[in-house]
Length: 170
Image 1 (cartoon, rainbow, N blue to C red):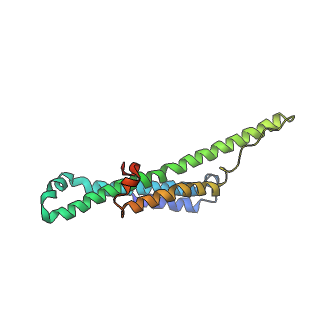
Image 2: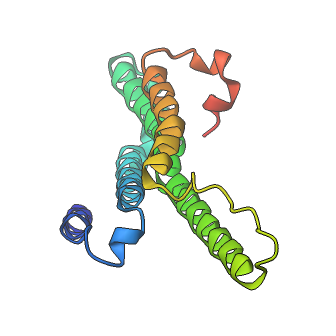
């Protein structure tokens, strides 16, 4: 599956300056593709680790295997947390931002059409803040950077769920 993601990213990079990709927020497409790959990777690793789950749980009472099993269970929980709180927002938030961008473009064209039809009074144009790709990238970074920091800090600070109770829910 890795070659498919690499191939699609190479094609995106080669064709980013051509239509129709040029007008579709290529950086947001990159981010959602990367989020899709991370979600796939975390899920596959978690499934590989937990494929022998009954052996793990029954082996916890054995002192020589206990540490290794606890580490694998902890890693499985961390992978689930990364998948839920990092990969899924990276996958879905760019789609929402692109939809907001399209909505703003539609509102802008609708207001221009009204101005052409009704010349006696001007219709107020909507904001063009969400149309600019740089602004969308800033919004995406403002959302994803705190989430990524929480995900990576939670691996070192195991009691993070006491401060952020929603973060322990996967």
